Length: 365
Figure 1 (cartoon, rainbow, N blue to C red):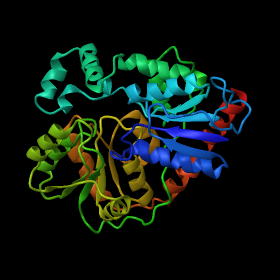
Figure 2 (figure 1 turned 180 degrees about the horizontal axis):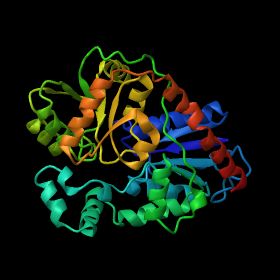
Figure 3 (figure 1 turned 90 degrees about the vertical axis):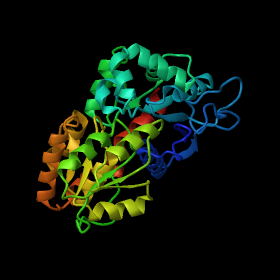
Figure 4 (figure 1 turned 90 degrees about the horizontal axis):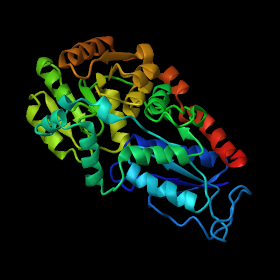
């Protein structure tokens, strides 16, 4: 059948874990024999072609091009809701990879830079949500849009059982059987860890959720160790990046985001990867590191622990001393054999349930 994949408009300008998930999902569906197109528009043309399945009915008097629309990202509801409405208006069903966590509940006000931390401490959550809606140009409350997107989806694919349970708790009107857990994956690594560089590595977008501010504070105590932070400011977090740079001791180095091949080399040479995020579902950079045999320092939150189990060195993201202790333990551990983890979490293996459910969503409605 013919499928249209959709995501936020800056998915490639500001690539993140959802970008990698989207690309691997496209590859898996194509390998299963389906035609997959990609559009980052809010309201692409879904009509004027010929459907490849009888369940994609005519819309507005004409035939439709697509049997299914596949949406990404419940965290950009203003954009995703337009895509969902466009699909339903054209009579095309859609499924959703949610990539979701309620960041207002997961990220404490202390995680933000001054003066945003003060505003987060004194403003009620409803006021913060209203300000976010105004800034995004949406006239509707973010939570209402998210509920609308979930309600209209044929199927929702959370990245972990913890994310599924979080969605069920946050949106109790959505039926449980609509959710099918599809784990994050990794590609077979091009190399295994050497640790030759001797540095700790933090890779990814720089922002309060990723918690680099507490990380650089931890490395004030780890003054004989080197920390390399690779990444650009997350959307709207330029001021946070400046605060992190100001707070960083001399043993912390910063680099802008690098191509994936270069990141693989940086990972292989690292003493450990450090990802003390307040929430991950889980993080793809930590998964890639584990597949290469790099020791990983991660936060003790449900989606992360469920993925890594005994492989991780766990910290409390709100406590720099806890980050210090976990980094020291990871540094003493040395490199491991990551091949078993890589095989267990191979993208082709973990995406197989998604392919089956996508086909069933169209075939049986």
